[in-house]
Image (cartoon, rainbow, N blue to C red):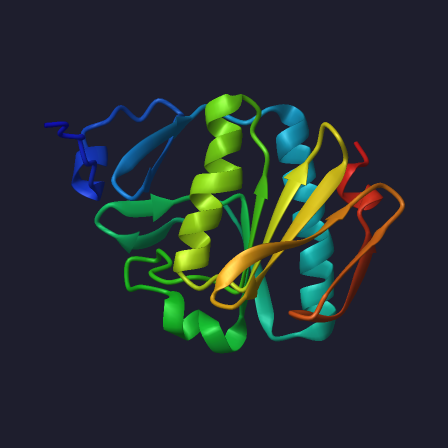
Length: 185
């Protein structure tokens, strides 16, 4: 009989505050170290473009690294989220954490087998189960952006954008940006 350890939020309270990022997906613990400089620069540029659009369009907010607590054994820290003003009241808990999914989640790939699998597989499945409408995975090494959109109750890959291509989204009316801007460093 194989008994797997199932982590909970309470277990995280005893872990050291050493700069590591602790996330739980279906009771499995994922530990990440501080991201690479290019990772953070890419995250910052995507945040800038989304924030500029959101301020022009109104009706939403971009947040870097918010905590999303779905359940005692599912708590993650995405790189960026966008939440409409209408949805914010539904997802924000009294503790200041998100308790449900924002409309858009963005992850900038952290490299290494475990980290890439977490972003491409485990987190995508989690966000799919939890109702995220759109999921972007940015790869600063290849300057590519993978787009997943909710179709038939799951996040499905719809497009991979390459340098020189323009990102638009039905979720973000009138948002258009050449993805090169995300990766200019």
